[in-house]
Length: 135
Image 1 (cartoon, rainbow, N blue to C red):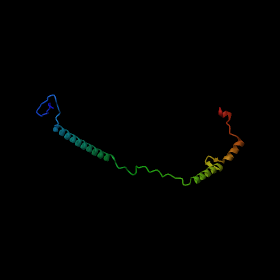
Image 2: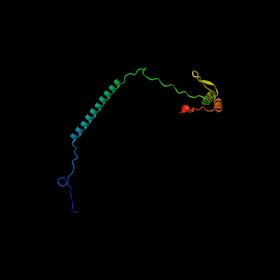
Image 3: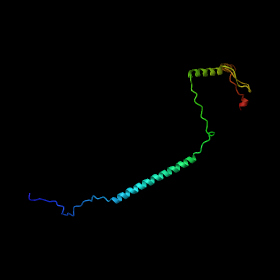
Image 4: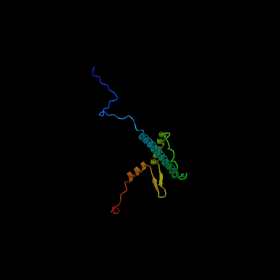
């Protein structure tokens, strides 16, 4: 062990380079301060714009007269007994088909029962147009 290499601090090796571990604090602090100021300015600007919009919105919202509001539609008419309703509807329709009634009393138009109308049609036939009127 005759060869012993000592690594002393006194020797200078120009080919060996290293980075300095000292950070320049001034640019970092300036950047942080500028970012904080920009954030505060943005926050204040947004608050001012929001307040302006709120004021304009309140001004544009005029109170609506209760007279101009349209009435609510009526509540739905629910069927309590649909079977009974159907029976009543069929009875009403059957009565209309099997009874005499005025359609237009002023002009003398009468509705007659369907069975009687069919019997009259079979007995008399369909009305025909005259050939002279058709041409």
